Length: 83
Image (tube, rainbow, N blue to C red):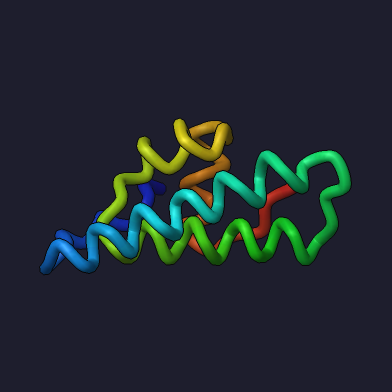
């Protein structure tokens, strides 16, 4: 099953919001990775979904956050991810 289609950003503001959420997801993944808890993973996943909703492509999210493409697609579909 493919990841949901990336919505086209309607404005420059939406693009900037998407970049912000992507950066936040990357921060959570990298800084808190050593002491990962369910809350950290949930926060990262919500930030990834928000970035995607604001027009960031799933390949860009996977590359920036450092997850595999399949894991990223699972997160974007809202499926549980075994980490």
